Length: 404
Image (cartoon, rainbow, N blue to C red; front, side):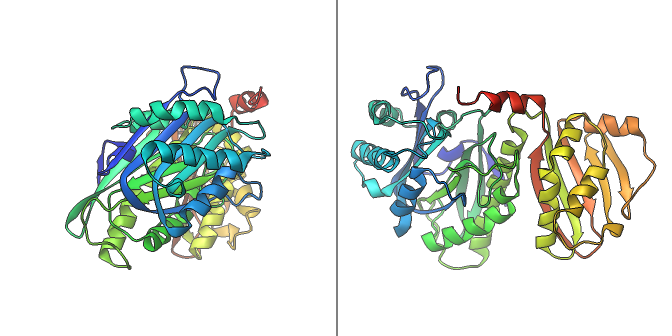
């Protein structure tokens, strides 16, 4: 049975974390270096952006965890370490510096960066900040969370308990992501820890399957980042029999993992740059899951629809339009659309055509901070959910001078 708990990435046994300001960012009140550490080596798995332009840390991390093992995660914010001539050198030096301070192997480090692309990154502030970072390790998931934020307006962290092999296991995560979010594997940066004993092969299987229904179903602005990564470390300190194959224990772990990732998905989408509303598109009645996913993602990605939601305008024609160009195999004459929030539900379309509804009631519903877009396709039993946000004036303001 799943239970939400406190602690973020420190909820699982044997994990500590910290976040400090080391000097990468000019604002001294903002932390810009984060660390997550496991007392013992852990099984590790990760998924990465499919953008052809990739940050150097992703390449280094991929090489480091090729053996399925890691013991620490270090991440800086304020600079993406992407498209830099010395990017690989900086990422590798970061691993070596933190490994020396912790007394572990440099190849057991997951390294990540987020921030401006194409800006030179000096190793000096990172090197100077690492001793303080390590010295302050403790139950500080919140500080690590702060250390990975860029344009995020709030921290994103969560943890759950589940039972595996009769043992209590914990899965916790932190995430950052607000803009440049339209993933094709994950989104921005997400770090998950667990004390469940699970082989690296099964951990990779669980993560790869999960992101298809979680992080791959988010879009804020249609831009896939160069630095997207989701990593999971499992140190086995819960004491359960190691999961090495599918079965009830694997399913229980996957359920906890999905609970954490789904929560973080909603947090990322709802905190989109300039956003005032979280949009959750729920599709049912698809011929198959793939068609349902295509429809949900197309609606969430529509700039016209996102703008209508900002204005609390029940312009359901934009939903139909997005379905029509999505490429999904649907019969548009069967499509139904409704909007729902805590203020109620309004049906706006049935069988591909508009139906009479109260504009006043629709406006009341759409003025809320969380909006559900309910789409019925009438072609089968498949379902899918995607998350996004409204498109506001502030998105342009934030990104008009993001670098300067």
